[in-house]
Amino acid sequence: MLELLKKRRTQYALGRNVTLAENAIDQLIRDGIRNSPSPFNSQSSRAIILFGEESQKFWNLVKDEVRPLVAPEMLEGSMTKISSFSAGIGTVLFFEDQQTVRDLQAEWPIFADQFPDWSEHSGGMAQYVVWTLLANHNIGASLQHYNPIVDAKVAAAWDVPSSWRLRAQMPFGSNEQPLPEKTFIPDELRFRTHR
Image (cartoon, rainbow, N blue to C red; front, top):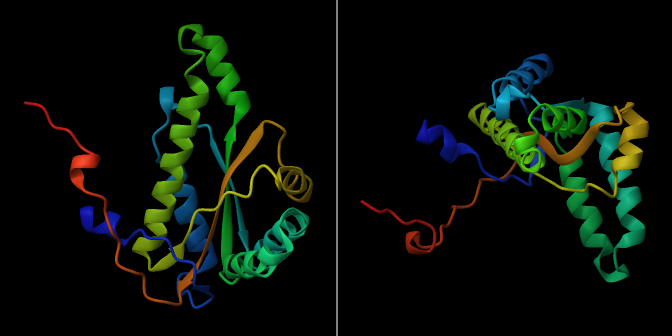
């Protein structure tokens, strides 16, 4: 299992040389999210899976929304980075269903303040599971956050239910460059064990 986790890395150099069929990737993503843990088995994570032209459409939308917000001297670099995400074969848009959160808050008022945080935990685990499953099939990916600046356009373009809150975007495709060695901060800064 640890070797599987080590394969999950950020890949910005994406391509379209993926051998796994789109329907198999789609099922892999669905299965990953379906089997991710959630508080009270709430299953609050939602996803829109985009392939081909639909994925391109999303990243073009991102460019349109980012362009007026970026300083002129940074525009070319920003557009190049966004283009690297659209160079892959697809994108997963991850959402958390806020109606599910509100229903849990009403049912369990003692935990009401915690459910928004727990929903974020659930969404993070779903994202990590999907990313790891893709990596296990030699499909590169990264996790991006162009929300909330694209939320309204995404909702209109893909008829997103109003209770779905966009949390992250995961472009994926073939690994077109080797992944760099991962570095770690010293354990003393991260861990404490008491016996």
